[in-house]
Image (cartoon, rainbow, N blue to C red):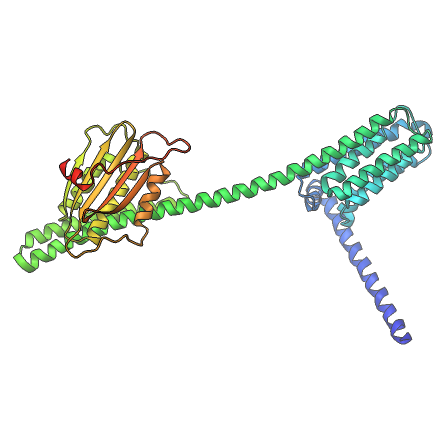
Length: 438
């Protein structure tokens, strides 16, 4: 054991020497960097401190502490050539050079202890009036700004106790209550800074969450747009292709087939342009703003389906001016998805589309028959859910379901922005029988 202990001791000494050499080299590098670029080096060292405060805030606090210490030292000029005030000033400003050149991180407790030692050196040589107690005021604020309360509260209490002790022995000019209250206010200022920093980080976190939610909502909106455009274009294109196939197989009508194929080609090109425009929303670069479809375009939408072979009738209100662009776009997309679902889920059915506008809301109704033997089932895709979201985002409501052997979709969206707690409700007004009478 003795041999092991003797052999281990040189290794420990060697490790300590290596650490000293590494520390000296690092300090020499810091000094050389400061000589070459003093401003940049000083700012970099301040930013390295683990206190999460802007460098300007930390610099202002340190400068304020040094100014108070220098003023307190100047008040004691009559005690010169004693070096106690100078030593006190060096203690209050020691952590800046120690961190800049030696890499020593200032700790809250050490800051408080150094400030109290400097205060004691000042108060050993009393003057009246005395600025030295404000060194403790600045130090209490600095400690409470970077430390937890279980550290800053005892530190501030110890500073107050130091002032009381020196006042008891007559080394403090009159005004002890003012000094004590000032230390308490310094501590409170530091706590407020810490709370402000904490709330700032919370707000940044909330902003990140809101930004992520907004990005998710934008992705869902773009997904709905792409889904609606693709469903619409493919449905009508398939109808044209089916018509062309029938024309060639049954009647050998080449002209009719070519006309259907031309229509399908045009719709395909239009769909590609719509998809490029919608996907282009994901690009951060500015792009040309193309008008979105509105309620006036529903008639053209129905015409596209009619020309593609769907048996559809359309009834529209005469005055569409009260309908806003946002409401018009929502009704257009809902009608587009509804007619695409008719072709997809009820081939051979007839459809009826109605747009009604009153003083409160714009109502879109799409009703289709169901061919014999075809069950009325709610789809499991994103079509109906997307339509419901479009209506609810504008304060409206949409319902879809089987009625009297057919399938109906009805969306009502208020013309004015919905207030809190408002829900747009509507009645079927007799169901499909009333629709057929319109």
